[in-house]
Length: 176
Image (tube, rainbow, N blue to C red; front, side, top):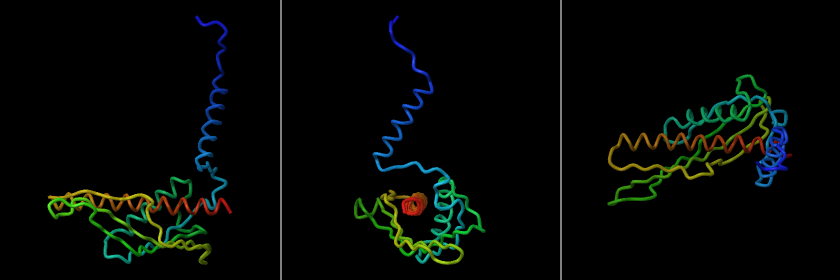
């Protein structure tokens, strides 16, 4: 038995753990936003126009935006004061590695322009939002598997773009 060791209360341990976690997060450039500090509590997602030849991107991006806003505590409702619209301007599918002169690894890139409206008036335009991550997929022999992998990569890309724009809106508006 160890003599002289005092047992710490659970609330003290929680307080110290929370303090250290906040210090680490703050030092890394991250911050925790309370729901009250968000720039808006609800938003409407308007038309996402796809000006590329790649089908279904607008649907993937609309779904990804809805999920990302909800994750951040922002309700998505049609009658909201704020509205976001987007235009998918670029979509690139580029081979990044080949085997026997056949592409086996591909990279997908999407560029989107967003407009935020308040009461029908444009308050912010954010041009050429892209994923901060490389979205790549592999595939060689089976065309079905290649197309399935491509669709998964496109959905991942849409999620990344949604995360980027929602984060930018929250960060820009809470740090004025």
